[in-house]
Image 1 (cartoon, rainbow, N blue to C red):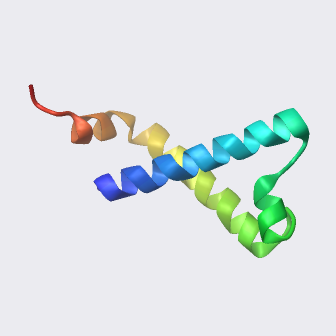
Image 2 (image 1 turned 120 degrees about the vertical axis):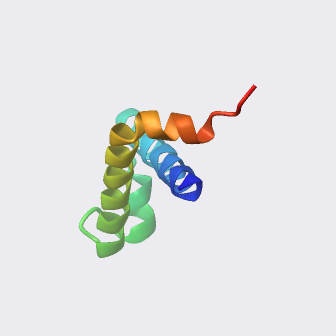
Length: 71
């Protein structure tokens, strides 16, 4: 499960940076890389970022417990 936590966190960072670029510069990096917002790969990336956000939101306490290092 820790690997899934890391993948989800990385995709959330990618999504957050992309939204920052959209907000500041009206530049969608994901769309630029994968051929536009309607392109299949762009939609896959957007969907994965959304799913990772939902996973992190629902699993927040469990994720904290998994990563808790005993003193």
